[in-house]
Every structure is written in structure tokens, then in C-alpha cells.
Image 1 (cartoon, one colour):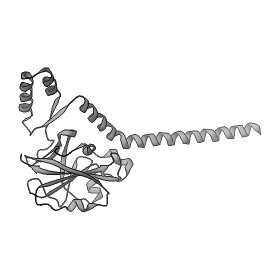
Image 2 (image 1 turned 90 degrees about the vertical axis):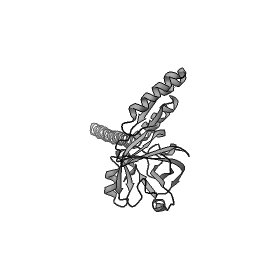
Image 3 (image 1 turned 30 degrees about the horizontal axis):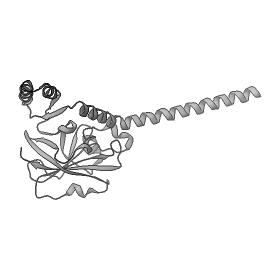
Image 4 (image 1 turned 180 degrees about the horizontal axis):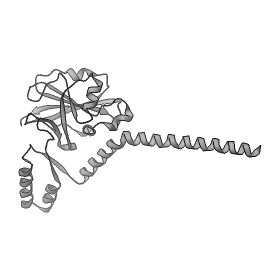
Length: 238
């Protein structure tokens, strides 16, 4: 009888430990899946800030010219200036037909045009490959309100499935540069402000303006779907 009780207790303990270990490992997996990309981007940004790395935006075909000009300038300057120039990288849009490039956070992604904000399947599919341009909003050069969004998801544990190009959007400050390439032309915008809002505050999507105005949206805080981070910018001379 005692032996039977011992065996039963041993099996019960083994089952409970197995279930407990499985739950712990599952939790660690979902935490890693959710926060891996945000943490990776934060570490990269911090490292590049410490090493003074800079990014310069170039139109397709201009990267070699810009690199050469930086090299010439560095050879004429001090050792510190030369080191600074060597720690520079040229960002060329992934697609000159429609892309967004933000040098401060090294963001470079294709923009998918005319994506429905009410068709969940459509925008989730778009966000796996690039930044979405909200259907019904203006295009660069039209003088209206352009609305671009990225890093949206259906469930919090699925955040890592979608592209991470806007994870560091909150780092942008007034005056920072945002570049949009559309139909082979480069459009430059300067940040004018930012705001964190509830997902239900959709009035920003239909914002009216008498000048060319850009809104970028992502989820906030990074790795969650609790709020929305908005960044506003106005077009400046090329």
C-alpha cells in the first residue's frame, strides 16, 4: 500500500513539475517573441549613439558620389573629423517608387500605397513587408495630409511578426528629417511634434490641412498595442 502511494505521489509530482516547466518556458517564449525586436532596436540605437554613427540619405545612384565627397572632406580635416566621416552610412531608398527613409533612427522601408485601415486582413498583410499608406489620404507632392502607419498587430504576442521599422519612432524630435521617395522624386519633411493617443482616437487619420502634412503612426509602448504614437511633420524645400 505504501509503495503504491509513493508511486502515485511521484507521478503526480512529476506531472506538476512538467506542466510548471512547460508554462515557464511558454511564457519565456512569448515574452521573447514580443519584445525581441524592440530590445534589439534599442540596443542598436544606443550603440550607434555611443559610437557617433551617422546616416546620410541619398537618391538612387548618388550613394557613391556622397561617399566620395565625405572621404575627401575627411582627408582634409582632423583625425577626429576623419573618424566621424568613416562612421557614416548612406541610406538609399529600397524602392524609389514609394519608400520612407528616416536617418536618425536608420529606418528604411517600402511604403505600400492605398491600404485600407478598416480591412484587418489587408493591413496586417501589408505590415509584414513594409509601411502602409492609409487609403484616402494624400500622396507626396499633392499638398495634402499623408498618413503612414506600421507595427500594428491583432494580438500583443504577435507584435514581433510585423516589421520593426517604426519601433524607434518615439526618438524623433522637432526638426528631425523624414524623407519620402515617391515616383522617383525625393520629398523632405521636418518633425513638428508628436503625441501618444488611444487607439480609438481616429480623428488624426482625417486631419485637414492647408499645407503638405505628414503623420506617422505606430503602436506604443514598443512591443505592445496599448496606445498609438503619432509623429507629425511638414514638408520643406528639397
